[in-house]
Image 1: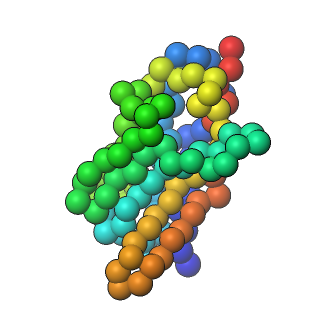
Image 2: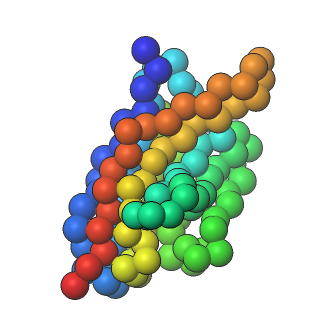
Length: 119
C-alpha cells in the first residue's frame, strides 16, 4: 500500500519554528520522486510551498524562501520541511506529495498535518 504520512504540525507562536516530516512507504523511494510540500489555508486553494527533485534541486514559494528548508533522508525514506520565522499567513494544512512521470505518471498525497501560527 502506498502511503505518505505527515507529522510535526501543531500550534506555534509567530516567529517560532516547526519541522514537518513525511515518511514514505517502502514502495515510494523518496530519492526517485519529486517530493513536495503543499499547504492549504482556510478558504484558499492548495499551493506549492517547496519541492525537491530527484536530482536534489530545491524550489520554494516566494513567500517562504529564506525561512523554510526542504530536505530528504534517503536512508529513512523521509522528507522534511524545516519552518522558521513562522507567520500567521503560514497557517494551513500541510500536505506531502510524491510525483514521478516515468515509467508512468504517479502522484501520491498524504493526509495532511495542521499548522497554526497564532499568538
